[in-house]
Image 1 (cartoon, one colour):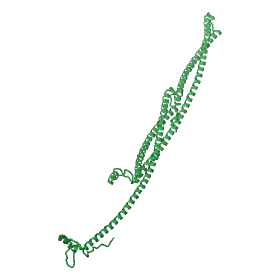
Image 2 (cartoon, one colour):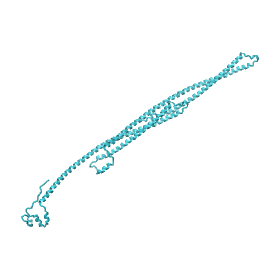
Image 3 (cartoon, one colour):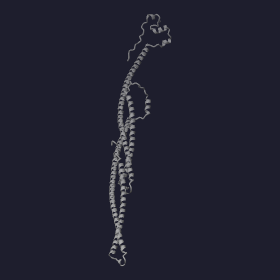
Image 4 (tube, one colour):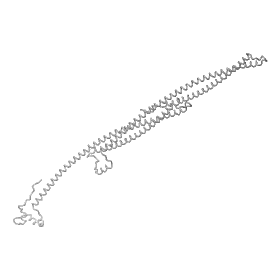
Length: 450
């Protein structure tokens, strides 16, 4: 901005007060010089004085420079105001964008945290379920101890059978099969328990990973929510140098958003896989328990059937032996009666024999010619021979009867021994083995709730 510069007006007329004291220099007077000379100023000062044109030029120069600086200052102030407004707007926009990004980040982290919490609850429940399945499997393994003990004791008890009854029959075969089956089931249950322990370790590892991830996200949410609540008027704000921020970040592991999501997604997938494998393990445990229980129950029923069949055979054999013993006793009684009659008959021949021999001896004393072989003599001879033959026949029959009686007594003794053996075998199978097997509660092999 320019303005008309004032000009210095030269004095046209001196006042009367100065005119009387100032010297005159001709037609043209220099009042300034005259005044300086009057005041006694040095001559050098007179030479340094400026003319009005210089003063006007200097004044105009200062005004122009002032206007130029003022214009430049106004331009600078306008630029500064625009810069302030732009930077303020950019700062507010960036801060609003950061707030939105923080809110989005809080939403994202909260989403992942919720998924992790849901999976954590699921895996905790699965750990509980698998522990219950493990407990059932342990109970199933423990439940095989009593059947094993019973089957072993049955085999040991049946070793107490005697003589011909100590036979490798179907009962022994099925008891051995039962022991082999129990041994296989025990190995199977132990394998299932080892697999279950491995699944539990895997589940616990996934659970720990989820818990660590959840704790990190909770801390992240706490920090991000705190940052989201901060504003320019918040208390406790402090200026932090960028170098210290970078140094703090460099101490930890930096990850991208994709790395962050992939990390949580990997934890979720590993946990889901572990849960699926755990469910399969539980189903396999239940299947093994149920199948083993069914097989053992069938084998137990088969062993019971073999015991009942063997007991029937033994009972029938004992009944037959008892019948034979009764018949033998009856026959022995009959033979003894017959033998008694034979002996009585033999004794009854003694009188006739004595009579006949006495007669024969008396008649042999007849004198001379009277000792003839008459009909009486022949008759006595025939009677003596007949009685003698009868006695011999009775003795032979008595010997045969005695031999028969001896055989019958031996047979009776054998029958009694065999009956005693059968009784002992029946007592072992029925009183010891079957009564012992009745203590088995096969439903107890399958744990409660299955």
